[in-house]
Amino acid sequence: MDDAAARTADHGAAAERTRLAWRRTALSAAAVALLALRPAITHPAHAGRWIAAALIFLGWAVMVAIAYRRARGLTSIPPRPARRTVPAFALLALAFALLGGLVIAL
Image (tube, rainbow, N blue to C red; front, side, top):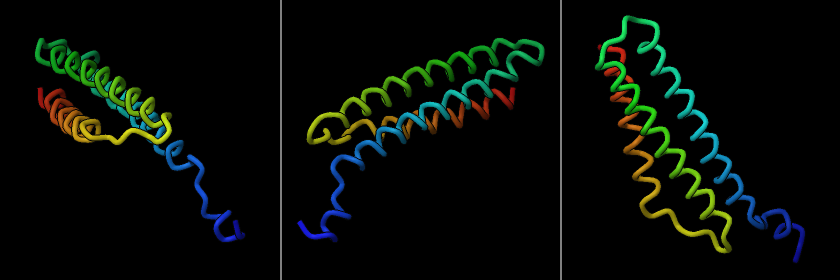
């Protein structure tokens, strides 16, 4: 193998970067879930705020489970393709945004 080919060889680094990106995204979702919980705690407790906060934490748990499953899929050789994982994660992120707005609006 020549020098140029040796420099461009990946040897699994892309899968590792993707796995770390999924982990970072799950961690940022945890921060969003905690920020969404804040209005439910600091203001007089309305049932709607508590329900929205509970749904956000449920969504966070599902997002962490999806991210964990995808990270495990990236460890196989060759990595398994993400067919349903990415769209499911995108829908959960959209639901996070809507529920976060609901918590603020209530």
